[in-house]
Length: 146
Image (cartoon, rainbow, N blue to C red; front, side):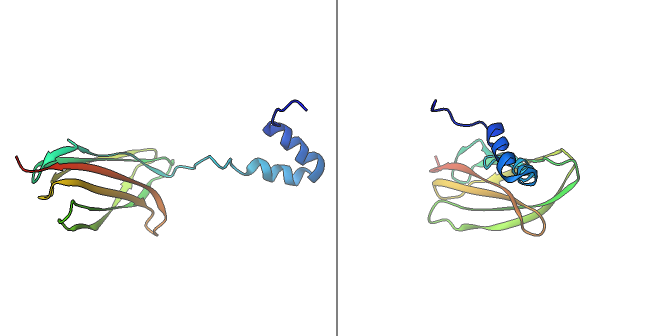
């Protein structure tokens, strides 16, 4: 025995030999466990600048890409947490229409929390029925007023 692992083609030939062509076609149709089918992707979600003084101004830059060749309507939901003892940020949702293989870019002006610490905002992209397509969290460092 040479210690080599059988290739995918070698395994497929074994399946054909022992289980028949129907099993082989099913094995070929199944994607690898590591493959991912993109419908929509968050290509950018970050604060700019990512460090500001309490009550300072920043912007939250958002970029969503439609990976399909069809128009896509998605729901964007943002929620997060501000540094303690500031309150939690309630979820805010809105619908966005993405062109086929298109990208939607936005920049939201934000006033930082009045409490120093790490502010987190999460963006979730979902189909209108609720199927989650993507999620990403952005971090903002809020320094004491100076």
